[in-house]
Length: 421
Image 1: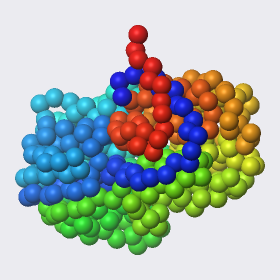
Image 2 (image 1 turned 135 degrees about the vertical axis):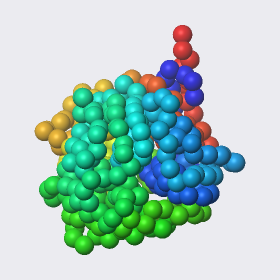
Image 3 (image 1 turned 180 degrees about the vertical axis):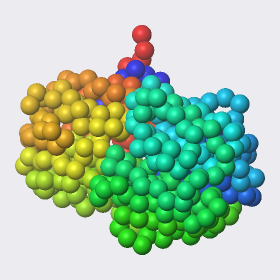
Image 4 (image 1 turned 120 degrees about the vertical axis):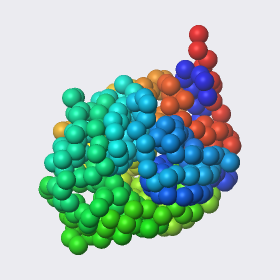
């Protein structure tokens, strides 16, 4: 979609049909990196083709890895097992997974690497990972504590034990885990404290690593030991994206429809699939929802909460402030644009003052997406029940779900596309 904005026309019918969500972004970018670090040819099926994964694939190509795309859901990756120093900085847009995962992996490369992104990525913190790598003897600089990051790599860590503060993101732990298997001796990762961003994503990382031949163990709840196995090329299938599924689950309950996404909720291994149990309780969702282990699903659930029977407080979501945008502020702003007083921030909690009578009203509102795909897709759900909801920059969904608007259209949702002037 190349329009500046799109206004959603609330459907007069329940949304029924079949929609296949794209492959998991989280798993695709893990698998792409692991395939790039493995000697030989790996075939990744069910993969997501979106902005984030294309940035990762292109970065691998810049470093001498062959990445072919024989069809819309497959990557064929052929690598020598080494990521060669590129002739230019690696530009990764606003792809947090690609940026953080590569930063650690390249610390075991040879030569100079510069990892950079767009204006939004340059505001996203990477300092804890940089400090952890420095403690391992890596020459690495990030003057702002955010990208760009410059790494002068010598092919080795000087130590085999690191302590990492993962309070802002579990991706720091995942990045170190994936890199450590390419080291020369067993490597231990230990948390600096009990806090960690969505812990379930570390399980995804370990599962993907094991599929590519790594040996990783978790002797305690706050430590991991990775053996220096390297990686073996393999064929790997990627499950659908659970975060993308949340929008379809939301559309289903809002319209009392039935949308078959092809995968049962309990078949997902991604943490955001936990959102299904909460969404299924609509319009009687709990008064307090802990979003710490399903962070990407919170914008979806918060928009649903506007139509819940009773108010909802979201807790454990402070990490949403350092995602593609400050998602707590973005959701609060969007809901209050629909109706003043609909949402309130209290510290890092978000309160949504539910009102089922919003459904069927005309409440003209322009939703600033802050170039964040999840804000755009979540607030589209509000447009299923309220007239005159306009989503700005609808093309930003291309970051993880390029076919999102087509998916809604396939269910009978109509839009007014507001072309650029």
